[in-house]
Length: 488
Image: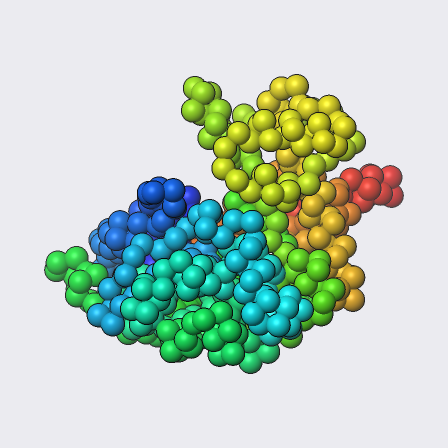
């Protein structure tokens, strides 16, 4: 048997997924190696967007096979993914249809979410129970859409599993809801951490369709033969890690005790928040657009979903379709040479959330604000990044007002941790020290929760300790502070 324990994290994003093998070295240092990467299969059919979960299952099996080639005595496997979307299963455990993607138009405009809130007693009543930010594609709105549009499917539904939970079920044969993922549905009681049965019934559903909730680190069972390649030496355990990708990323924030901190999980979306002991369920928090989601060890991730690199990713996609294949390095170099903007945009305006025509949408937003549109690509990228940083600063101020806490340091985790220009702009806009890394926080959190659950972390070493030891961290000081240091 291998000397160092190994684990597999299957990390699924809305654009791509990967399988990463982690090896735990002496001192609690996790080394990660990607063994499989794939596009997340999205299907457009009859005006709707669906996830192809059969193809996704094939990619998970392929990732596990490659992991076992690299580490034949793999200890365990766990899956994390985005939230809100779910697979309805019949009594035979098979999907009744493909799961809708959260960008599907059936909940667009927020009418379904507004109707769900009305049935529960109004927005304040729904928020006081669930603590979840009102986003038009929330699970509760999708369930109500099923109830109203597909009653025959609802009648045949025995169980619903969100994406990561469904794939853990395919691996293990055990259907469970993992708490960090369940907390995103707007169907969970934020205080008890259990399903809010009255809320579920109010939208026309039955609580029996939602499986038993388990905590991160729960062992579900061994991988079933159907998930294993022929000739496998052993069947790894399947764990419910922090199944929600943001919860896994926040678990790996390398924060130290004693200094109040906030985090930005920076990717396609930007999740800006703090970690609390209890939820904030006030009307003020609801109006400000904050959400209370479960974290590791009973914590609450009090955060706000903001548009992240999606706007720039869409621009890059459109430029590529026009024949310009550009790297981030090239774009950031061009943006660094541009004079800073006085005015910025609100990238959370609804048009920016929809696919297509992103450079034109940026120009239109500039026209609405009465500012000059970017004249070239570098200026456009600079405007997007400065707008993101300004949005982070506004959210940080809201966090401090709602929690009564002065934040000392901002931790940036996820892919955005590699974006030097954005991180410096964030430090300047927030007037805070920014610590960037780990850039693979979701994978690292997934792996470290597995290692802790199996008792492999060294005595006295926490998940955050191990994350700090395992990651490359970069510090950015705000401009005013840099000048102060220079002239001290």
